[in-house]
Image (cartoon, rainbow, N blue to C red; front, side, top):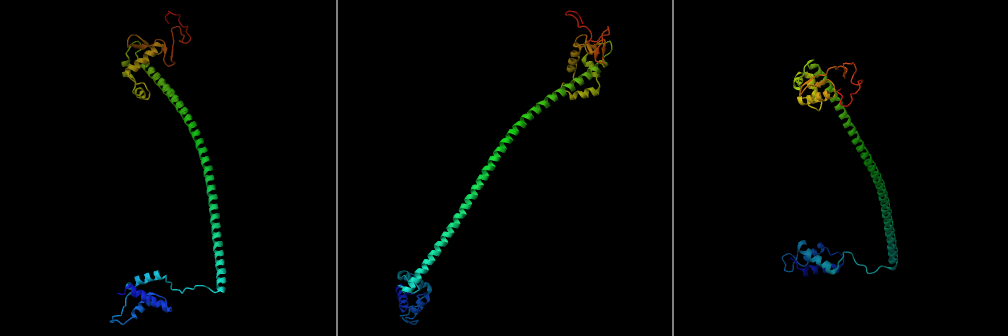
Length: 269
């Protein structure tokens, strides 16, 4: 394996001849030229063993495969200067043109971004205005909805009241017909004899159809001189002179309750 000194000597010898570059092949050939295989002076070597020493030699010697020219002729120097000036001028012109292109590009992007920002601001303001309008409209709809719900509630209450009044009037009419003409009976006795249809219809009113409710309804009408008269605790009879189909009280003098003079205070009706 060749030493560093042997490799450097072979490289210096090749360089001194100046006819061929100092490459791996020329250095190996130079080393092998120092003797024949088998001789004591034979060095030989391979690219692996020569390469590191040759690389270091090139670094130390600052070797370049091209011959160095210390100076150029005057004519070539002038041409070289003109050429370099032209190259520099072209290079700077190209650089200036590229910078201008970049500047124009960035300016266009800035304008585009500004336009997008303005458009986004306009859309944002429009969206805010629309949202405010929607909130106002929503509040108005809520208020209107609350008013409508209240109206519906009142209408339902009136409907329930009218349905209840109509139902209980029918119950009173049927109870009046059930009562014996000259006898008094209890609310329970009347309840047992009400028709099935009347009992079923009681499911659609709020007040339950039971004995206590029936008694209360009968007593209210007895106090108002309608349908019934009360003859004791839980004892009810037909009101004398009551014209059931017409819904009015007819007295013995032929006058109705609405046409008869109201009695004075303390005077029996």
